[in-house]
Image 1 (cartoon, one colour):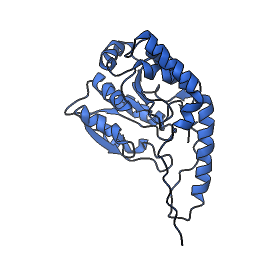
Image 2 (tube, helix red, strand yellow; image 1 turned 90 degrees about the vertical axis):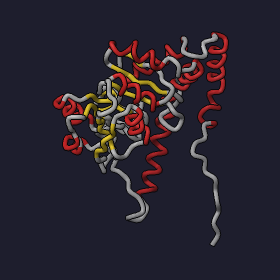
Image 3 (cartoon, helix red, strand yellow; image 1 turned 180 degrees about the horizontal axis):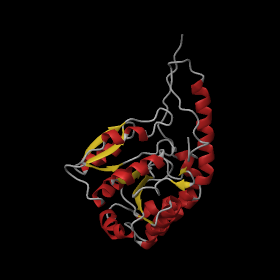
Image 4 (tube, helix red, strand yellow; image 1 turned 90 degrees about the horizontal axis):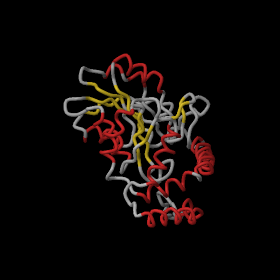
Length: 274
């Protein structure tokens, strides 16, 4: 028997970026000519466009999706002695941001159907110290938000949506990130697309505060290149869906016990990508 070793890269951005070389270089040149390497017109244009897609009144660019969650927690006054409920299955930055704010993450069970937060596990975890719930929209799938929002409204809790892996997805016709008090999205390359992050908010009162916290983390290059990538996403998403569907078909042929795949939830909650 012969084994062949292959080096499979985590991500190859060349296939995504090289066809857009002209647009990306144009964006770099605009930033170079303007001298606005931090903030500037490119960032403002992208913040406005991203907030429109997210269904929010405004968006503020941050240095990372992690900082977007942290700043949302800070804006709500959450800190030492407080508790925040989040799903047990998520990227570590969700709980890490809670710890960075000085609060305590409390882990709720995840749904075996979509791997997102199970709303049925939230209420038993609420205590007098609970201040917020962070539902996470994983793998392009929206978490089941109606029961989360109902619990939060009834118990007086804030909701911060972590939509880092589902920007562009919708829940019952509304963009993820627009349903709670804050929505945070990420544009790190392995995610939906691009490379920075922003919290989107419904409250205009928080905008100056958020801007002061985010002003040092956003580059003009990021804004310009993200705007260029924006136009390409309509072609990327169907391709990612096709790849996901192909992988799911192959994985479901693995003998029982070899893998676990969720059923297709697209009919209920449209996905942005696999």
